Image 1 (cartoon, rainbow, N blue to C red):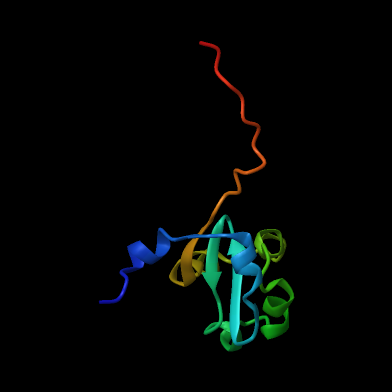
Image 2 (image 1 turned 45 degrees about the vertical axis):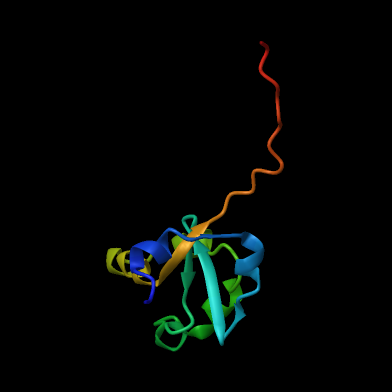
Length: 99
């Protein structure tokens, strides 16, 4: 059986994994800490495919906001969510708690 959209949306995806999907045949971006698969949307994007290819495999949040997309466009992103960005906790300081 296939994954439900809830299960897919709960998937944690590393930034390194997103970076591998940077072509027209596999185009993922990060938007508001969510990972979107925009491969199927590439040819439908009203602003053309080049703008999406420029942020493919990267965090496109600021670029998306700079263009001031409509509320409809923002809501439409939800259908392309495949997961959330896995936070890298390896650089966090580890401190011991006094006993």
